Length: 334
Image 1 (cartoon, one colour):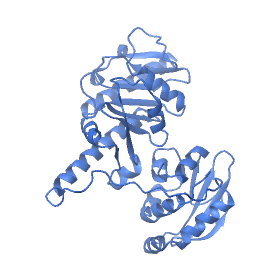
Image 2 (cartoon, helix red, strand yellow):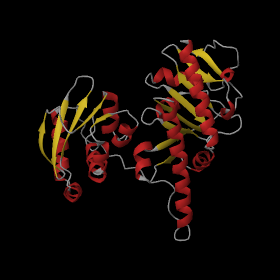
Image 3 (cartoon, one colour):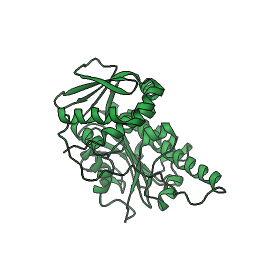
Image 4 (cartoon, helix red, strand yellow):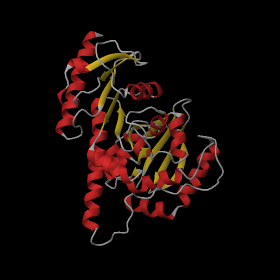
C-alpha cells in the first residue's frame, strides 16, 4: 500500500499545481482528496496551498476521518468523507473557489451551458445554500451530486467528484469556462437587450400524469406511441437520416429493449443485444432520467450511464436524440 500512497500523493500534487496554473485555485483555499481503498483516503491538510503542495501536506486517514498521519485535517474533512460514503464509485474529490463561478452563483442558483459540448458534459449545474464558512450539513451536497458530478456551494465554492483527479479537474475547468462564455456573450448582447434572464429556463415538469412501471411493456409502448406521433421528431429524424438500432438495458435484471429507428421513426422493438448503440444503467439512474432529474446525454458523459457504440456518430444526431429523450421523460415512472 505504501507505493500506492506515494503514487497517489504525487498525483494530488500534480493536479494541485495544474489547478494553480489554470487559475482554478488561489491562496490557501480549496482541498483535494483521493480514495486509496474502501477503508482509506488521502486528503490535503488545512491551510495548504494547492499550487505548492508537498507530500507532508497530504494526510492519510480512515474513511471515517480518523487521521493516521501527523498534521491537522482540512476543515472540509466531513464533506469529503460523507461523499465517499454516499457514493462508493467516487475515486476523487476537488473543492476549490473558482472566481468566475463563485461570482456567477452569487446572483444565480443554476446554470445551463449554451455550448453544445459543455451542455452535454455538465448539464444543469445547481447551487445549494451555504450558511457557514466550512460545511456542517452535508445532505444538500449529497442530494445535488445524485444527478450531477459537479455542484456549487453558494458564497463558498465549487465541488466536483469523479473517477480520478483529472476527471474532477475537467469538470471544474469546464464550468469556469462556461461561466466566462455566458458572461461574455451577454456583454456583447447588452446593447441589444437587457431584459434576458441570465439562465436558460428548464423544461417545465409535466403535471399529474399516469406513472409507469420502470422498463415495463406498457412504458415501452407509450414511449413508441409518443415518439412516432411527434411531428418535431419526424422532421428532425428525416432531415438527419437518423436510422439506427438503440437498445436500453436495466443493469439489475438485464431487462432490455431495442428500438429500431428509420429516419427518426420507431419501426420495431426487439430484444436485440447486439444493437449499434446500447445504453445501460442502474435502476436509480433510469428513474432519474424518466423523472426529469438528469439529462441522458449528461448521464452518459459523466459515466452514470454506460454507452456502447460510437459516441461521435450518435452525437451527429444530437437534435433528434435530444427530442427523443425529452419524449422519454414524458413517460414518468413510479
